[in-house]
Image (cartoon, rainbow, N blue to C red):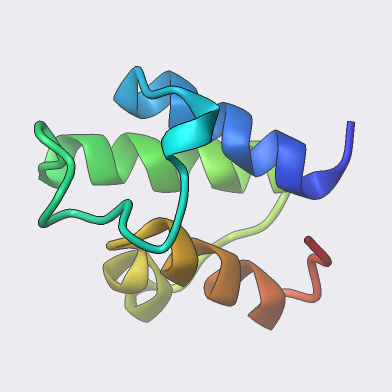
Length: 79
C-alpha cells in the first residue's frame, strides 16, 4: 500500500467518507462532523500509521486533506 493510500484510508475511516470525496475541498468547513474529537482521532491515526510524532503546531494544521499532505511532507513522507 502506498503512503497516499494509507492516508486516504485514515481519512475515509475517521470521517466515514468515500475516497472519491478526498480533494482540495475536503476540510473542516465543508465536512459535517469535523470537530476537535475527530481531528484528534485523525492525527492520532496518522501518527500511528506513519510512526511519527506530530508537534502541536502540525496537529493544529490538520484542518484539511491538503494540509495533512503538506504536514506529512515536512516529516519526509512522500505521497
